[in-house]
Amino acid sequence: MLDRAIVRKVVLLVLLAAAWEAYARWLANPLLFPTFSDTVRALISSVASGQLLRAVSFTMALLLKGYLAGLVLAGLLTAFASATRIGTDFLEILTSMFNPLPSIALLPIALIWFGLGDNSVIFVLIHAVLWSVALNTYAGFRGVSSTLRMVGQNYGLSTVGYITRILVPAAFPSILTGLKVGWAFAWRTLIAAELVFGVSSGSGGLGWYIFENKNQLLIPNVFAGLLTVILLGLIVENLIFKTIENATVRRWGMQT
Amino acid sequence: MSLLTVDGVTLEYHNGRQSFTAVYRVSFNVGRGDRFIILGPSGCGKSTILKAIGGYLKPVEGNILLNGKTIESPGPDRVFVFQELDQLLPWKTVKDNIVFALTTSRRLSRREADERAASFIEKVSLTKFSNSYPHTLSGGMKQRAAIARAMAVGPEVLLMDEPFGALDALTRAKMQDELLQLCLDSKFTVLFVTHSIPEAIRLGTRILLLTAQPGRVKAEVDTRDADAARIHELLFDGELEGGSIHA
Image 1 (cartoon, rainbow over the protein chains, first blue to last red):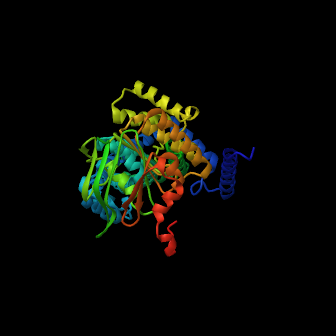
Image 2: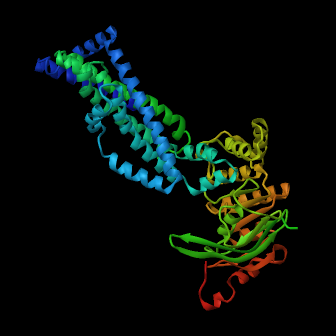
């Protein structure tokens, strides 16, 4: 039984939940640290009332908008960088400048530029996604072996065909890494932005849900919100990206 | 008229600001159905000549003509088989690699390409592996698939750049026999680059000997009237006595 990784992980999760429950009961201070069972109960009732699902769909819709806009811009930037030398320099300068800058640090200025509303959040999400995706895609293109390049040119492909049918699949391991890193950045940024931003806007995503419940001292709900953030992150990273990875780079023997 | 004419070709490599001559005024003719071997020590520019014929490199002097027309760019009338084992597209199965080459280069319909791919996969006895991804194949199988892909496209001339160079000795010997058989069956024109004298004699109908740095033509021999000792002598004449042996 214990030979299977999934069994071992489930056992560990159960032990963690038990330790949480035991510590919270011993502490007996639900305002600081609610028990595991209270948290689960809060989670279930929030889901049942539709409050949590509304928050999740709000957050996800915003996230997808920012993520997709970031990908489109990353694609344009990479194309520019691949096509011209000045584009390469442009990409290198921009990524080395902006990659170390946490997106959330741009939120105050975004609020001034775009006002209260989705646009400010989408702006910081684009910043979170753009650089890591562009950098990884560009590195992937550069890493395509000269043999594969020559093979691709051998059959008389057009430039567009050469990019979409040779370069993109050959660089796909790097591109996928970029997509994953970009997603992780965007996810963390969005929750943080909602915590700050929700305060002033009132229209609520998941971060706002957490913040609002904290204000009302509904601490089990705060924990339920945090748990939801964890669960969604796990689902996207371990289900969606894992599935893509298994169907592509693993199947092709290209994982690094 | 010969199929391929290489006339006084000089090729240079640029490395930053420096340029050096890889090949100096090389001329030869390849006739239809020839198995033409370019033989020479490492660094004699034999792969560079092949790249120029492939259209990946422009001569700084001289002309390369295929059917009387100057070669401008890479094209499916000259298909490459490389030494590297990563020349198959890793995201496509063996069969899809060949179908891809056929549909992009010859504008075949999907169905025709499927049939042609299957027949060439059978020729290199990979039928059992036609739906396998390249990373699951051995080195020899990968090269067989690459040869099948190149032949299926039906080029005027096959350009083979030490295709067996990365294989172990046993597999290599077996692949040489198979390639010979395939060429005899289908009358392909092959330009084959190697630094192995036995391989050259085994596969070639004509052998072009090059010297190193820069590559120049030393001799052209017909395999029917040359044996290994004679070729060895031509390649290394004088140098053995002088004590410097290029292995």
